[in-house]
Amino acid sequence: FPMQPQYSPQMQPPMQQPYYQQPVAQPRVLGKDRPGRYEIIVDSTAVGPSLALGDVISELELGTVVEVLEVVPRYDDQRVRARIAYPPGWISLSSLAEGDDRRWARRLLDVSMAAVATPASLRSISPQGMPMQQ
Image (cartoon, rainbow, N blue to C red; front, top):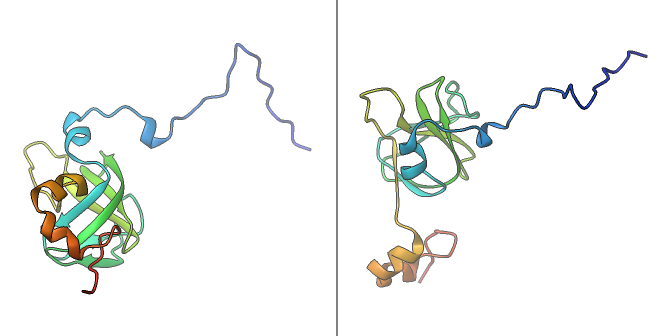
């Protein structure tokens, strides 16, 4: 049997924080982008299977509304990435590159705020954000 390393209280194994607990150096990431409903503002926005940029499994049309479940700053790719519910995958929300203000999606008002602003428009939308038949 291979020997397991022994650790004393003085010698703790290295602990690695999950990416979502690591400190974020970009305050705009926390202030602007967070889970919620977003509208795609660039036609043919790519949906990838993973957090990192790479393969494209789908493309979203201009005006498509998506539910963002998780937002992660991805400094290797200079992007703020978001995990979306449908189609399942990851999109870029914005660029982190210095001087690059590109965005691929913008956050929509919360339902509670939208209800105050436009109550009539909510009658035809279900709690899941899907259009309801009249």
